[in-house]
Length: 499
Image (cartoon, rainbow, N blue to C red; front, side):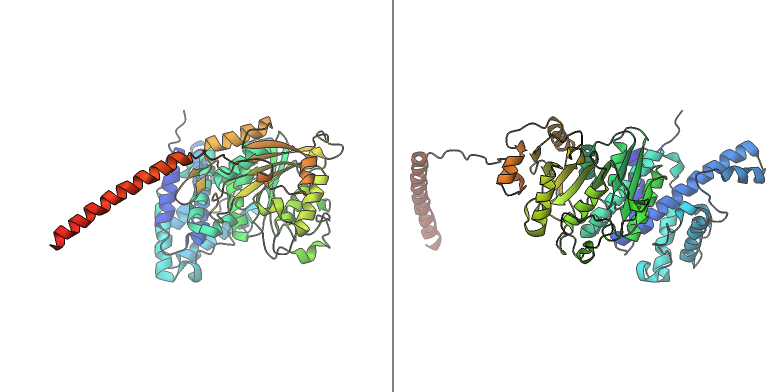
């Protein structure tokens, strides 16, 4: 019988209340790193506590045997380093230092957790404030998490709760949110469009905290797939590592570094190749490294070098070069400018079209992200359309104009399940839908100078209702008559008031 008591909604709410109420004056974009680290730490401690209790029930006071069995557990929790050890010392004046030491003990005993806690300093005056303020916040955090037994939730519920927390902190972080997560509904759409298969190697070269990567894996329908990712920002990279652990994806290969300048997913001195590459890269990234691109050791930018102040095509080029030849697939979120801007970008786009690998262009609504109010698009690139690939005879491009598929909410627009379903169903059928989708042959693309602006190909014009001029004139005459009567009444009232 399942004795786990936490439902998803209850755990989400409980964790958010615990984290948010402890924040004090610390900015949400910064505090998230501490709160999410604490969630991870408490989960490890609770799992370990349950395992120890099981072994004690079986082996009694045989500490040597229990210790031997714990070596085969999912991780090692050194003596004195659990959350409960911290809880007992929460009144100490140097509680931040005590937490730091406990976390680094855990790193020392678990090779795959090396560096995981380097980006959070629980004794930082510059981030968490002076001693009195800092200690109050830490004691509140410890006290709130002490009330939550995370062993009483299924692993998938814990993982989803972590993602919920990331998204809630993202709502507070405003424009900085794009650095660490993609709005869940948009990420879900990308993952479903990607359609990964059994045995797929799936990569996100701009993975943030790993949510899109995990959703893409979920679409496989089994555990027969492998996840890979790279992230430039250290704190965000460690959030992704924790995210994988909490979802039971400890085997994912994640790297910390600048994908465009220093790709680290390397195999036999070459770029690793993937069945599927998905990403929501930073839009129009400035100073992305254009000055180094010509001498790229992996020749990723052979179609042309993206402008130095707009890195969109640099990411697209990298993703294409890491997708398997004649079978790999790329699904990437891009700003609309990618579809029509000229210059170097226009030349790269033309080359991709001549290679016949651009498969689908989907226009999404504006206002879906905290980071920008601009409308964005999803570009689907299919290398099975290359010469020798299974779809080399597919010579058209499918356009979906879904900019009106959203629910308007106060903070930002939102894709609802019905919007996602409509887009996915249309993509699957790949047929013309009036004012929504159209299959366009290559010749028409060529005639439009390789411009992929969606509204050039999907007519969304709505005819205005024909106006009856005679009827309108009669209505205006009647309004004039009513105004004359009203003015006379007003004049009479004023004369009466003024005497």
